[in-house]
Structures are given as C-alpha cells and as structure tokens.
Length: 324
Image 1 (cartoon, helix red, strand yellow):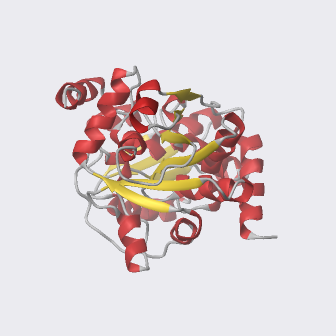
Image 2: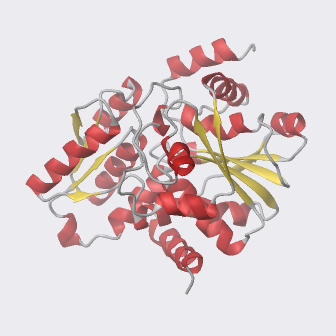
Image 3: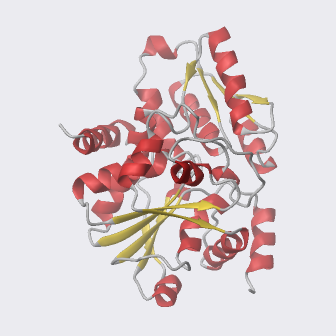
C-alpha cells in the first residue's frame, strides 16, 4: 500500500468518526473574485465550524482515537488559538477536562473565547514554541494526553476531510489554495487529493512575516524563526525541528507555496467582508493569493479556515483596506 493510499484510507475513516461533531461546510461561489481572476472561484467556508475554524476536524479525530482509559486524566494542547478552541470544544462534548497553553501573543479575542469554553487556560511565554514547552511539562506531571496541533497522523487525517469534501462538492476543481503554517491542514488535503486526483494543483499560502514552513523547505530542513506580529496570527509558530510528518508531506504533495504581505491579507479580509463573510487574517490568505502571478488551473477553491477575530478589529480592517 502506497503512502498516498494509506493517507486516503485514514482520511475516509476520519470522516466517518468525526461526522457527528463537525459541519460539512459549504463551498460558495464568489462572483467578484471570479470576474477579477478570469476563473471560477469558490470559497470553502471552514469558518462555519462550531469552534470557528477547521481545527475541529483534527482535534475531534485525535481525541476520538484515544481510549476512555487514556482520556480519563484529561487532555492538553498548545495553540495560537484555534486548535485550543477545538480541543476545548471537543472536551466539552466528550466530558473530558482540557488544558490549553498559549503564549502572550495570542489576540485578546481568542483569549476571551478560550476562557468562555471553561477549559483551564495557561498563558505563558512569547511564542507557540514556549507554549509547547509549558504544555509538555504539565502533561508529564499530570499524565495528560497531548493533542498536537498539526504534526500528528490523526490530526492530519481529520484535517484531510476538508479535501474529501472539496472533491465531492466540486468535482471540476483545478486548483486548491490552502493557508499554511505548521502544515497539518495542507498535508491532509494534499495527500487525499493527490491520491484521487493528482492533476489538481494544491498551493500553500503563508504570510511573509515568519513563514517557517516556507523557509524550512527553502533550506531543506525544519528551521526555527522568531514570531512576528501579523494579521494572520493563526499562522504563527514553528513546525518543530524534529518534525515527523508535515515537513515531508508538504515537500512531496504540495505543488507550490507562496507568501502574501500584510497589505494583501488586509485587502482579502475586506473583500470577504464586503461579501458578508467574517474571516480572520489566516483564513483569508488563499484569497490574497489570487492576485499573485501563480498558475491557476480550472475552478479555484480557496479554503477559508476560520472566523475567530473580534468584530471591532474586523470592522477596522475593512474600513482601512476596503477602499484601497
């Protein structure tokens, strides 16, 4: 059995396991973006998940893969926000206590949302890597299950269900634009799509402020980089110097990676806002990529990954970038 066949099987299993907990999100057409690019553009709206982002898929699959005995002491994770919200949501659904470790860089809107979940929240350190170290220490001391945010087979398979849905909803897809940080989402999507339709282009999109996966691929091995503030705050964080899955999967299955500027991210958020969609910066980078000189093939799908941004911040961004 090839690696792609194995991953395809894992994604299909994950789809069955997580079905009671997630939303099969719509793929919506964008008339404006289609006219401006000359290609049919569709938006895969993962911001409609109950936790506000695609991360629920991977968190649900990883938690459901554990036995009741393993889960009895509780779970822990580290996050830039959205994965923590997903783990906390699933913890409540399954009656499992959750501890979420985040850094001081996480925006207040996500901190507030995390507090409202009832999970134990630990805020410490200046980066996701710092939060990871804190989480690992707490997990060892308290015998908690660590739910990794991206570099985990069950998480990757759960995120890959986005790709499964895209192929079912839009069989003529030619290019899929996927936000890229640690690589869990694009690894799952690209592995499933390449197993079924190797002709479809899968393109990763990151911000130009500390794009760790992009730089790691450029250098040929996982690297560490300082976190820099960005509208796409959910794309911050490293990939781990001892990365087990996502670095290699992105290198093998992803056709291209581009980086977008803060200006382009802001403009993409404004465009989506004008179409009635609240999407955070990290979720909008696929739309920002549409205005780069990249090879577009057939119908385009931009994956909108989350909505977890405060309404006041979103309105300021629309006002600032919407008239440009």
